[in-house]
Image 1 (spheres, each protein chain N blue to C red):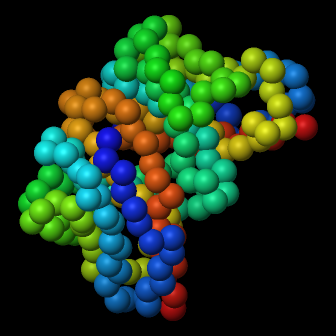
Image 2 (image 1 turned 30 degrees about the horizontal axis):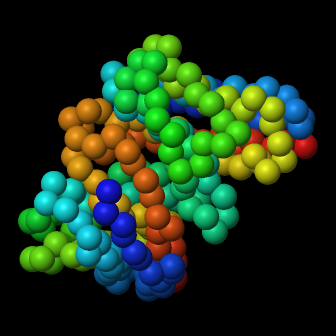
Length: 112
Length: 110
């Protein structure tokens, strides 16, 4: 059974903390994505990676960075968390010649 | 990637067919139409995709107009569990950018 696993389902962090959101996929997919989802705004792409150590900015990269040191793992980093980064974060992966993307269950991050 | 537009929300009676439209008038020749849905508090789930022919699987049917400028996702016998947000997106099969619009919130009512 294919799987995209996000390290935490719920996370509470303080303003100014450095936050790591981890995502692992077991499908040997080249492409991995990080989205945030807020009420009324749908899914917005933050960053994606098309290969190890390769990344491209999505629609809303400000305040975020990413790391892809291994093919199966894609990390989203909030260098200094702020309250406006409180959101649901979703990770996805997709093969280079594949059709569907597979999503993790999401991490609901609250920054207080 | 082509921009898609969908109605914000729709209602459907349980047991009836749900027909969800999507406009993708700027779609290019190598872009497929994909449909996903997201049930509350879960990650989006793939439903179906197509290029120009109509497609059917165990979940739904996809009807694409001949000019490919619009499509309709059909859930033949909607159940309460089909209540979700449905996203229509258009991008190349081998493309790597994957962006979503606002989707249609489908409410299936008893």
